[in-house]
Image (cartoon, rainbow, N blue to C red; front, side):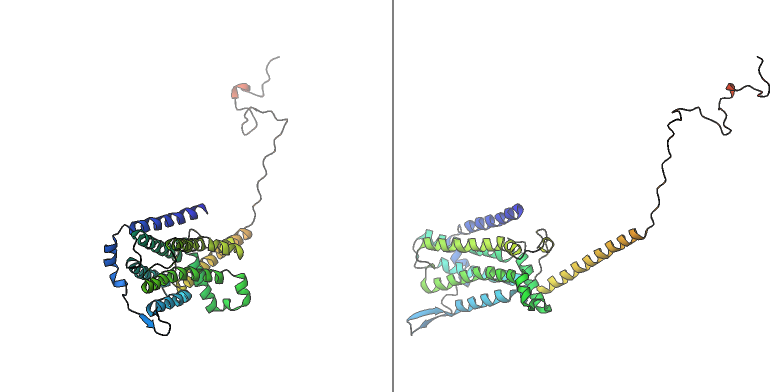
Length: 322
């Protein structure tokens, strides 16, 4: 937990540092760089009935974003597509923030740009799985695979399996930053100011979105695993570096893991069978010690005679004189 929190803190601190560096770019330079993404007045039309205006382009972008996030696990290479899409969203939003004519104070405009950058960076890190080791993407792909193979078509599956809840959480994490940025893009195009009653409420709203994104991405997977009581072996490993880009890659990886597990089980079973089939060799009994035998005895030769010949007479038949 401490290492995960440390790495997530490093990512968040990096996002904060990059956001601070981006606001050091002069507004004139930023205005020139983002000109192709400002869209000018394209898509804005008047509604005569209500004497107001609407942004058809921004509405279209919002709907595309929501539908893409819902269908993301079905789309090949959806994490990469999402990354490209949210970068485009950020560029469009920043281009309108630079051009707010109703905001006169420079510090207010810089504050809006800073919070837009920070929302974009934290939202991107949360969406691509930097705060949860890609766990929500993996579970979302697995949920779609379960639907296709029939496992996820029963009611008990949704009550006992963590995959559907992980898919819903991942979809919300994908949607929130896109809807927030495109909503600001639309408001700034129509009103030429930031989307809040004043700068302080704008700061609070932006910080709330950032905290929700970080909390949902970092703590969401762990909370879901506790709620659904996921076994330790079935939890997404923090050391795993496998990042599938579509559900087919995940399915292939799962087959490989199942095959490796099957081979390992067969190996263990064969080793156990070999151990059971091997006859037991009785151990040789240790020689018994005779307590009456002296510790040190004179070495004897093969015939039982002392090895020192000088201790015996030369002719054993001749008796020595008395």
